[in-house]
Length: 389
Image (tube, rainbow, N blue to C red; front, side, top):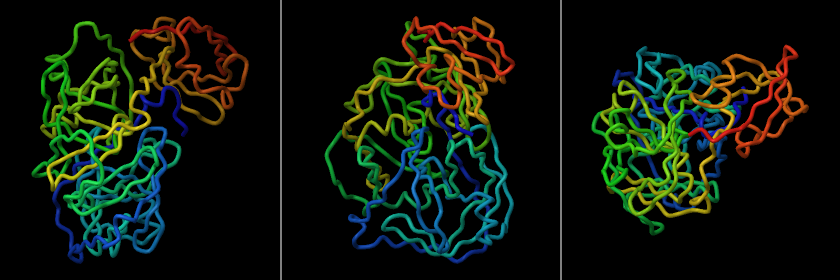
């Protein structure tokens, strides 16, 4: 399913903190090649701001996601069946959206750039394809593979590489970075209104910009900020959060306008003892170095550093479905909400053009614009775009 408009609000919130069940497998042995600095891996940035690339697992090519929000690397049940990977131990893991069933299996070899790991285990999960948009992946590369090394991500050039910990290939703003003791999640900090918030999870698999728990947000929220609602998908299911746009949020010496999601105090961040998360939507504005063993995250402003946040002016969150657009969520306080739109309505045409080929910016256009939407039952509605958060 092709999820549309505005994509920043529909970014997946993957996150997977796996338990510690034991599985009989060859002991993991990791080797970083001497030429790893030259082993750049090209990637595609998904519409949900996630890093999608191809690599090798047990001698098979696999589409993968670079995901520091995953404790243990995981493959989909579909790939496991095709590759003959047998589930050995069943369990459950904590994920964004709730608990997910999984099983463990041993593997022979996995490669990521200049890194090769032989032996060890991976989780097998039934991943909802919506967490990665219209191009599903079969491998989630997590902290167990990445954390012993420095990870450099060049978002402008759409490439990354793994380096020996301690390397500093570029200069920028430096923030503390460490691994959570039990989960292995990457932890750093940020500043909101002069208040230091820590720890915050650094999650390359989360396509959003910044998330905070509700209690942290209430203690720090500026009085003038308006909020609405939006949905996103985690491995544990659909999540509805409050959403706001902050004119300035500081990470180290950098400040930028950001879209903020407010999670329930029972959400993933709070369950991991964190104040919130920094996701790919914010990281993609920078050149990034993540080196938890050296205790640092380095950010240098990239070409997208000053890009404005994309805001919905319609309040309709929709997905492409067989040439039609299905309404997934109607944002609180939006023109769509005040004019009677509901989830599951089907749109067949926009300003007279078939929904499948209509421009994607109709839902985020200039306030005051009138958009003519034809429902699939033949009814026609006019929606006036408005700034509502």
